[in-house]
Length: 302
Image 1 (tube, rainbow, N blue to C red):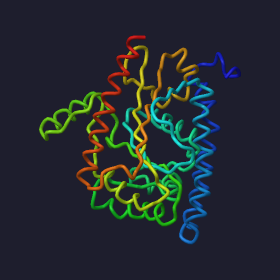
Image 2: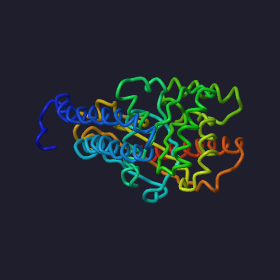
Image 3: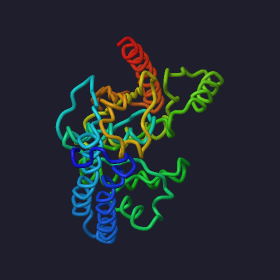
């Protein structure tokens, strides 16, 4: 942005982010006030919360892509407009949210994104209450405790036919070299294939989600996203949250590359047993790793 050119990057980041933080606080307050209304008018609250979420998420996406010059490239399958889907992705950094939101925005589903969130956030005033009002799945990663929460979320999607992108980072944690090493050890001990550049995915949540959402006629597909970054020739290096907000010309001048490879699988074509679904997701991660490895080589050759 020309008006912020020449400013120290930290000051630039503060000036860009401060109005958004105020707006986010207002959004959280509005969503919190909707929470008791949800008991008597769940459809109204879902629509209203989706509009509120759109305004907050679109704003920060504009900061990243337009104000800070992030060039996100895409490859793979085209996504239909306004299609409800289960979304699975690898997890590298905070910037993953921008990658997925960029696709959701271009597909007319930004306000309908719902992310699996940590259960502890439920009790954070305003922020947690807002996530609860929106219908975010609040999970502990302890299966017996999470089943009731997932039933609550799935009920609205299936019976009320709420439009949705239900998004999960199937590895359940961010990629780091140490975690990659731990994943390789676990895969070797358990006879599982270790995907390149990825952690082995946790399959139980995915299997449960697919088996329940088969009953929702408007949920048509599973989207599998492979997210990739590069910084000045180093693969799998993404900017920090603060850098995404403060750095100008983040692609052109700072040397970051951002890419998402998209695969769309019709839900009706997925296997039907739990064991087969788990194997299906495992194979997607193997394929995704091979794609990322080929992309790494392609970028290195340029």
